[in-house]
Image (tube, one colour):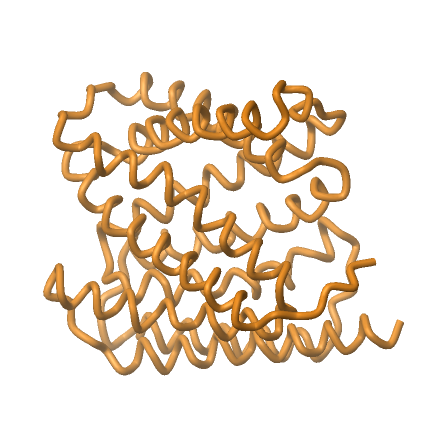
Length: 293
């Protein structure tokens, strides 16, 4: 049992690192997709990430024994859904404003609530259903059907959130057995192979030299974002860390205005606030129930 005292200040610093990583990944993803499709992007990202993870494992342990696992099925399933979600996220990145994509990504916990009964056997209570419906009201406010045209970018954002939700569910299972670096090793390995197969099937081109720094940023931030988020959760409860992540929306919205001339849509912020409120209330509810058991 972890008896470490919560440290919200250090958690906030790690969350700042996570937010910076996510923003840099979004900007780099748009820059790279001027030339490459999502499969090519994912191939180079995963390949670079693979070498980074291997180097870290060698430095920390001196060998690769840490990558041994007896749970191949969990790793494969997790990585297929993470690969799907990440491709959808990068695809949506080019079609809708950054703020809309991030707001739709915030539905990730809603999908975890809906899908956990199927994958984890968790009970879907009436209160969870109510909070889930409130979250979907937020999605409608963000997308504004009937007010503005809906297209593939909105669908990609929702599908990305679903992929990330299933990825999170299986990550919970895997972390009962394997360490983080083991998970990252098999993630980068399997996604390099998946991306290579799809890249060769849909047409392959080498990235120009101008893209190499952007690809390196994507690979590094893909690792630092999740490492920073995990570190924050290790320093403070999720009920403290979750509100910090909401800061990603105004920051990424301002980046969209500054770099791409995107507009600040108040409805996106309102919808995101509704989604976040439903997520946060569900998190508080789950935390309270665990404390009572």
